[in-house]
Length: 554
Image 1 (tube, rainbow, N blue to C red):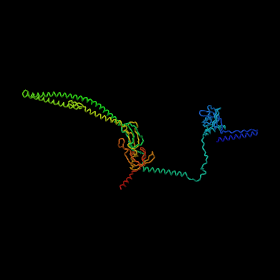
Image 2: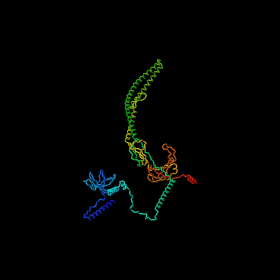
Image 3: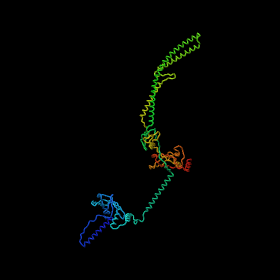
């Protein structure tokens, strides 16, 4: 605004000087007055040195001003008219190079001279003030040092309000409401009420409430173990999934089925091997039986010939006995000779009877057919009937074992693990494809609806808690309150060593007592949620307890 006003004043002064000169000259001689069209430029144009950088090229400015600049020496293709560019204008001043940035638009091109004229479209306040300072000092012929120039331009100016004060001091009334005093009084009153209320609540909570932060929601959990050795084939559920009672949790390879199948196949192979061996022994016994029958018949024939010889010997013995008796009667033989002849006769008769009995036995054995066995004198040789019975038993055993193997092969070799109750899966200890041994943990299942709160107290704090009393429970993670009922108190829970299952001493300040609470109305959150329990404090005052005993005694 100041620059435009100065330019306007300059134009008006030039016009007046021109008019005065024309009047003076007209008095001397008649001259023709020529009215020139006023200049359209709003700013001075100076030809002071300035270097203009456009992109990667630098040019010398022919002339420049606050409105724009004109550059020359463009050797490459001239920019298009109307295009916008970012120019870096460098002014050499007393050994310093002052660079200003401006956004410009191409307004005129001279292809013959290689010149391009730019109009500044965006020039910062600081750049504009600095360039105006340079132009004015060049026009007036006065220049200051660069330090003073930069300091003067960059010095901040405190803004002066141009709007009138809506509540001037001279128009302020003599008497007014003590607003500040009222506000401070209300502030201190509210602050006092807040402080006293906080102190009162704190005293009430200290005397009649017991806050326990070492509490957590727990529930009944059961580890699902592998019923047999095998590989885990599939797992239908993941951690956090809800399941119902009887729902299949895992499918794994039945190691017992594979083991039973291997045992059955082994037993079948053993039975078949034994049967083959017994068949070979049976064939051998059949061959032996034929030999035994041939030997038996030969023995019968030999015994028959021996019987004939014994019969002849018996007849000779009878004749000898008769001759000895006749000689004894004549006195030609002794009585001992007669007795010897009779004894020999009895011996021959006995041998004959034994042979006849033996022939009868052999004939009965031969008449027995396949059951013929050879009597060696001490025992019967031949086990044909026994071998046949053994072969029959092995064949039936083979058929049974073969059917068992077939049934085991047709049976599905998988084992399904079902949920024993409805709940949530909390842990998963094995991955699909991994091998598990019988008894290894697979899952940890948490029973639904069994949530309860477990609070851990010191030995002094647990004396202020009673069974059946209600307690307020705050759940920080959900920012809500629930109510619970004290269901169980165990002062020695922390005294039991989990490893040795024996009692051990704990310090008085250790939280070795455990109080269990059940929900009263609204259910507890999932297990593992940290909670804060506020019990009703029942103090064990000696005077109060003594008075209570006296009153109850009356």
